[in-house]
Length: 150
Image 1 (cartoon, rainbow, N blue to C red):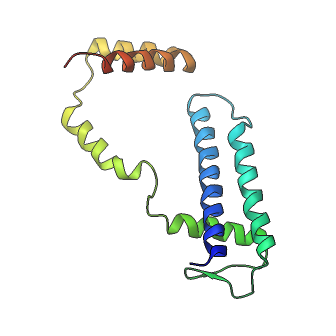
Image 2 (image 1 turned 60 degrees about the horizontal axis):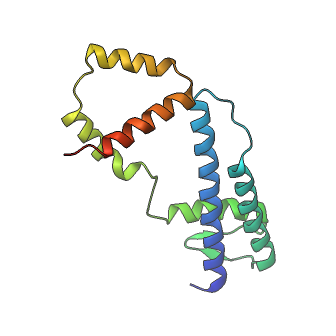
Image 3 (image 1 turned 90 degrees about the vertical axis):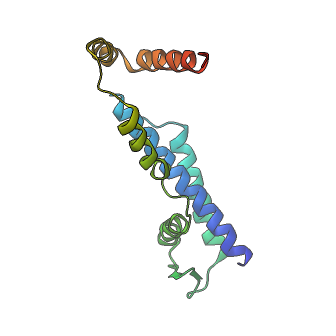
């Protein structure tokens, strides 16, 4: 692969990862009941996209420039969108959760017994706590579980 294609693919992967990280952060905030705001993930997404668009513009791609089986548009914005799609389509890592989902479900089916009344009471108590406090309690519990002798 020539240097132009590899540079554009690398920048497109970075831009796509930044976009996914931004959306994951926003989804996490919504899940905790908080209002999404612009964070460093937003500025990183914008910067990564601008770098990709600048590189496409500077490369002055010919009209028939192809990456894999996709002919890129001459418009830098459309080309950036195409590159992000191409880079994620040919990146075989896939979604982060997809590789582990089957194992997680099998573990849950094999080892997770129904909650007892006391455990359900604790779950209800945790659900009523503010998100930050609940996260802190879960973090302490996980830390203690890691240090238990086997």
